[in-house]
Image (cartoon, rainbow over all chains, first blue to last red; front, top):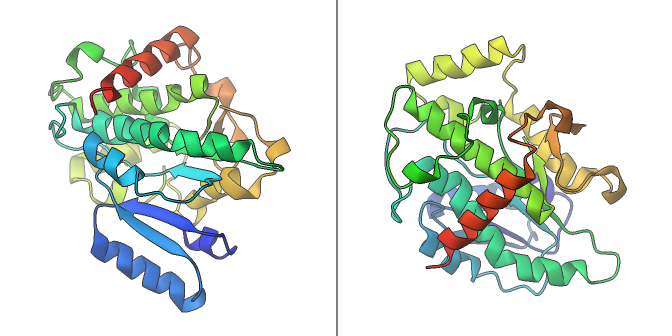
Length: 174
Length: 92
């Protein structure tokens, strides 16, 4: 974000769970870029209602770049607030909701002259660890607590993040 | 893999998995400084004409679709996941 702020964007929105950490980051950026225009939105990717509510706090009429950058890895077995395996919920479903909510404004922006609208999703080499079927939809509402489960669950998720990209014509990056 | 808190926050066992797998793949963990280059490149550094839509890039800015396995390239599975996801988001 520091690098992006350095190039004088019209406005940057960023999200996270901790307002305190966010304020510290903004303060740091302001030391070199005092006039940079930034809005922090509190968002918990593990709660779909939170993501939707937070995404609706985006009030600008255009959005040129969306970076889906957050994620967790190899965490202990748990369920999200919505009852999904926690890594799948955070890394895949949360971002899917965010993209879904912001897509209309991005499509609108893409129609303006000389636009260059991009969605960047970060994934990991961990996708190679996906089990045979890619995503286990039948157990996705459980904690999937099996041998080497933390990494198997991660494999499912990373596979999902990556694969969801194709139909929507988005860009992916590690 | 990039050495962020995603790795630092892991316990000893999972951390050794990260280092072990990276060793087997013949890659070393990247510093945060280098790790962020890829996302900045696809986001802002690369010109529109230099990018392939929906493609998979490895650091830094290397088009890597050829490294994908059969499932990762399966349009059938991609469609299934997409539709499943849309349905999952519906109640919210």
